Image (tube, rainbow, N blue to C red; front, side, top):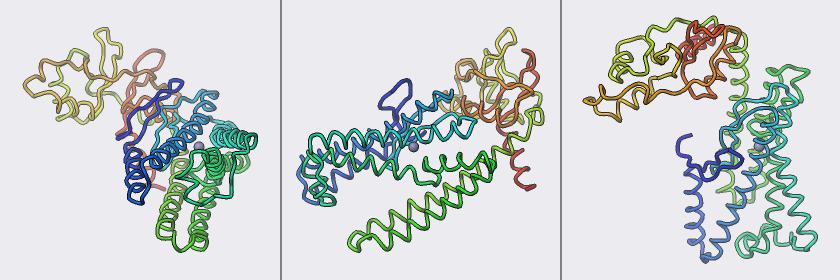
Length: 376
Ligand SMILES: [Zn+2]
């Protein structure tokens, strides 16, 4: 993801911070100072915000670790001011497994709420009387136990709302899926989500006190609008996957026109891209085996970074992406798509009994889908 930089790696999963998160921390400091907070309070508030995001990371790790149990890899966890996302490499096939993965996130927050609540109860440090007063937030670090209890209760409830893109939406869908089928279950969850989004805006208009409505109402409308469109998006994804599952890789397989050798000059690759029909290419080793692939974005990137005069001094081999997983004639387009995305490639070779029988690239897939959608 563009604009996100890695801050940690937990159990092999990179945790990345989106730059807007840093901007938000800066904004909090400036706003705090402007409204008369001293630096110490600003510092505590920053600690609080970071604490919230630690809770969010733990929530996402809940998803990541449970997904791992079903053999689903997590690419990374991204934190932005809107929250966290664990980017999973797909979903477990069985609905019940999907709901376990979806529930593992909120479960972490329920456990954290239990820990903070239990600790607060034992040390009698929970003080709800100041709730809502600004001094609870800014003034006193002793209130952190109460705050983190509330924050984790909020995070678990919020994420369990039965609407996409929340975890609750996924849980709700996987409960409906076995009896209704994935497509109808998604559609119903979509409608429910859109209903909840509208309801939230309505509730906000009634419940938010007038002096806060200037900030809160637009925030509610924005997040509800986001929910509204994400709900639709989720249905599109299921529809898209169903189309791909119905078709075989053999419907798109083609013979490559141009195959590079790994010691071809990059001038040759650039020429092929400029004058040929293909945008994505296979690259072979000297013995004829596949060395990797070379695609339009990388070819253009490379052409920009190396002066034209040196194009005959560099070789294709320096820029190719390796292929870890190929496709087979028995694969559906859905499997092709998943293999393509998980390797971040644009073309894959098709093998039958260890022999290369053709290729399929993303351009073909896009053209195919365009026709499928037009015909609907
Ligand atoms: Zn979650």
